[in-house]
Length: 395
Image 1 (cartoon, rainbow, N blue to C red):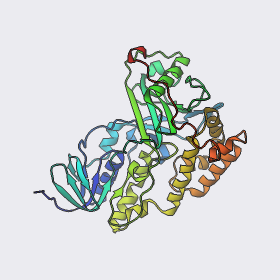
Image 2: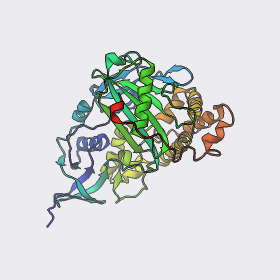
Image 3: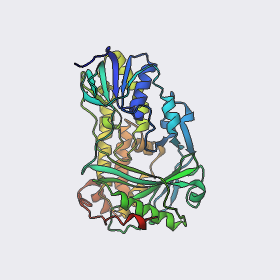
Image 4: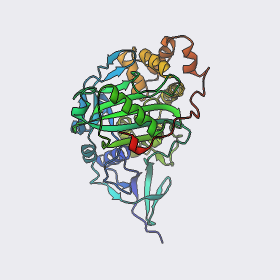
């Protein structure tokens, strides 16, 4: 017979950064909080980064492990983005999102419904609102973000990235990929712990790019700058869908939150800062007995998401040369315009203008048809990547 618990105001299932932030802010607001995760105190595997101005005021700035005052974008030339960027400290972030006033269940959720969560041992948790912030399923053939990161000692990385510097998007032709191969770029930032992550990244391909292909390209870039590795450097892999839509409105439903709830940015793959910023919006709606999904996703935010999805579809069918031209055009937009695409949750009017102008100013003219999907709509679908080479031949 299943054991039952006292009823809670909110039960958060999944304690990644988004779920933990929501549960933490709910306890600060005085709600009775249950939190469910098989390993609630684990350090999350991915590296988390964001623009500093995206962080909510309630989050202490000591969670910032590395600050980059003006990250660099390389397209046809070097461009410094005068907007401070940061890498977050996972241990300090976890500590800042304390759950001392929540009841934490270190178990797997076997059943998640609108007002009940059943755990693997049969315990049933009752809650006025249930929030699902568990991780994303595998992408299959959906539009995908794929990345392979290599953690390199800071002194070894200096020919490309020094302390306080960072490469947000590096499109220089140094990864060994030809013009008739799917594009990828390099992301490289210091982590504040004596290492720099070099992460070759692909955005928008259906099914994503294989890890071995991304690693080969990353190593080619490092070699182009005289950086030699031992082969023992730690690595990080990412492979997740970019097209999880906002959930339908309705009181009495499970509330998806974080990347599961449509907060994964379709064009960048970022979700953590947006989830932090929206935690209080969800908590406030729950306190008032209102529809949390409606509060999180007003029509302005849904329209913004819809437009970003058009950007994702365009990004996923471009060649490298076209991608470079598109980013050249985009980064000529005003600071507000750049924010409208990269981070603002609901600035739909400016976003519409930025997307239009990006297409209008991308040159040559015929490439604009690829951006909007009138030509080459299925470019790169089922692209035959070369097979992986034996492990002992890679460094």
